Length: 306
Image (cartoon, rainbow, N blue to C red; front, side):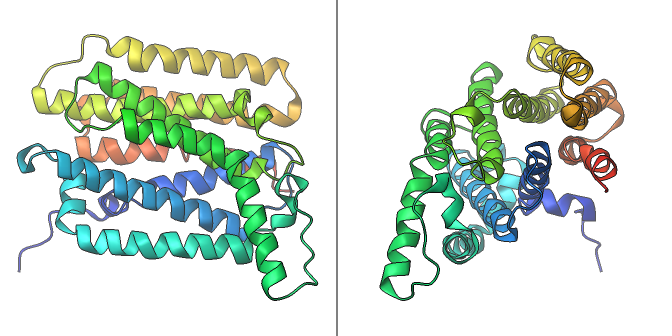
């Protein structure tokens, strides 16, 4: 019997499970950063589920627009099993809505509406719907703008790397704001502070470098030549991000140090992967690029273990 050619460590990427895991981990990091001792479990699962749905839909759409010979491995896998993926995506999306209504504490969403949990029946349901609408027009609105820009202006599987950076930037912002929203709506205020948060923007830049690195590695492996401006779209931004993180860890509040150390460590991990990319397969590089974003977990666990 012929053995499968797909290694076990590649399955999370093929099944689009890597991005939801990264989102849920960084939601926990943002909750620690902003001093929220507890974030409801439903928030993690709703976030992970929505990220998975978005990734599945994006990969199926990308596969539909590209020819069979131009598909990447993960897109080819999604296209071949598109009926299963899209069916599951619909179910997961409905589950996320249910998780929001019955699991997310709506009374804390921007401190409005004041949900009276003693109510039952239609009146309580109306309050839940009102809270959902309020969430959409605060934190959700920010994420939807970035997401709409991604799907409207970032479509296309085989485009020049210069244009692909725009798609990656929109995807990174959507991912960063969507992840941070899961913790930030515990503040009794609107999303303005989150939009301009140094930490959220740093995480967004880190996500952008993750996407740029994967695109560069795959394109260079396919074409056998380096991208002319790779230093400006990958290495230089990572060096700047790492340097700024060091300064922030030195001069900013002590409580925020583990976050800045984490960004520094993740940036260094991506730089190391790029430095030794010739020694690794593109498959493994793609997986390790996401693992680099999970490197901060031990730092936060050790720092906040008490």
